[in-house]
Length: 225
Image (cartoon, rainbow, N blue to C red; front, side, top):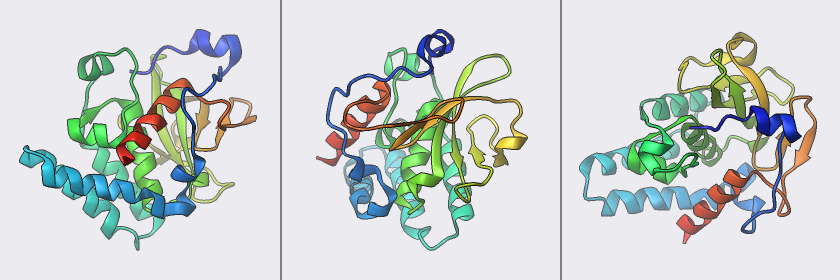
């Protein structure tokens, strides 16, 4: 579950901290899709080594989703990926990982077949990158719901200056940001940049990042072997 960020944001909007491990941007940029071979390799590894037939089937479905959708339109890819991960079970970080706030890698989410809003948004983000959606068109968004609960969604921009579509595990319809008046957008980020509420851009680099994003990237690099 995403922590309550009201005080966090009030103090410094988005507090950046030093990376605990090196961040290699090239490994998450969509123009280097070959760097995402590890997703397919890990899918094959799970298919071949899992003792649970359902887990193997889930990774086969994920592999097929990525491999067989490369020639589809962006809008088709967005819908397929959104629907795929929205079928998974929502489970809190405390119950699933025995932690207050944990951002799972796509592999971890697929193994558990469960996660919370940030896990689903992250899995959608990396899967779409592997399917050749440019990272510039994707942003992970922190939002507030009507009950003031913190939430995370993924936004996709059909064009860089267009209204984004929102990929959400609660409201499973693909709606434009304009039509998601139930959400208050606080800030967003992708592999390179972080956008504050006033649309000010902060460059993410080796020197600064969100703590949870840094930890996530370290674990993704370990998965690559």
